[in-house]
Image (cartoon, rainbow, N blue to C red; front, side):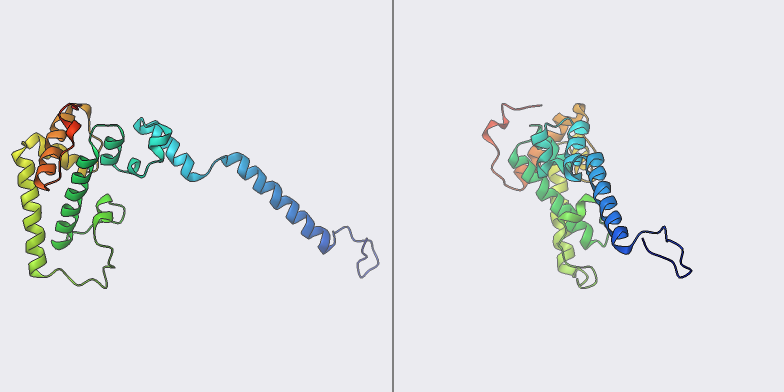
Length: 197
């Protein structure tokens, strides 16, 4: 026991005892926190995504589970080639948006399809690049409209609005995606003729 300057016995702990108490308290708090949380944030996200979107744990762990078109691929609604066509279309839309000077929020899923150059360093799009981006967008949009307005609307709902697709719109969406496969000259999957949702 330590004594105070007046000679009385001090009831305070020594600095060594105080440090030991802090360490003990920190270790019990971290153990309680681990028990309370139980699993990593990524695992929680995958489980929640699986519950909400009706995916198996393996499907929820896939990187495709974070996008609407990826979940449609995981559920077997669209094939890998059709997923690639949708991603090409998203790239065309993102480049068109950038060329036209439309702002894209970082939280927007189209932002990942834009070139990764910082905005301050990137030069404004030149006249030729604007014309090329507009031409590619118009041609892809015309290919969708040839498949039907319902197909164009269903693809726009998934690609531009980033909304889940109701089951009733799947045939129209498939028609639009097949039009994109033909437009981008991708070889269609041989099993697509037998596979209609």
